[in-house]
Image: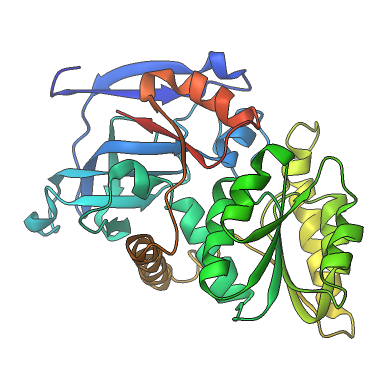
Length: 343
């Protein structure tokens, strides 16, 4: 690839991972207020797994370039952007477009990556770190001495969430398959095997009075069980519908059903609370406020990494041209952490 060329991975429709298309083109030019970021690391999130099935609730029409987030170096800057930004390593939250060697981003949407943090390390903590930090500290407001339950404790978000919760002084129960239990114990997490154990019964034995917070990305029956495990004053944070990934039918219905449950539970005369977390919430109302909060929270996550409160869990690194293999690996359920793509 020459200096003036870019490559991008296109999702043409509902396809198996091998149906992804690699396309070449010219490096884009930034418009006013924009920068071109030379991608150094992007990732495979659960969102892309849903998107290739047409199951992500607000994905764009096919074809499009997936890629929820990225880390890279600012290559060029458009009018109105400080020239000093060129050459800076930054992170950006995109929703789509990150699976490309060069990406145009609004300069106001990039967050500097501190010195000493590698691109792949930082990439594991963009969408996953923001999600974990905001759910833990902005919604559940977990405090030292509390007990929390994290579903999918070995996953991209879950692995960050359990570490942040432990750093906050909470006791953590985490669901995962047996192969990940030793790693969870090393992090001070009490593991529960979601494949072989009765999760509600096991959690009630571990926390007879209920748990102070549950973080649930599964949806379906799991969300009802999660609500029932809360202690008085506890908080349920739902942030996905993984159980419906392979379903047919409306992609909006599982989310609408979740929102309906959350509304109903909060309307009941009880001291428990339920939230449906969406990282993009509030952006339409105030883009400036959204950006400021994103920058502040991602900076906190990067500082937690530098302190050693959390580690960057890289499941595998593959070149962008092997996005199909990366997506297949991420969907296999055999890895812990995040699968990272590099240019």
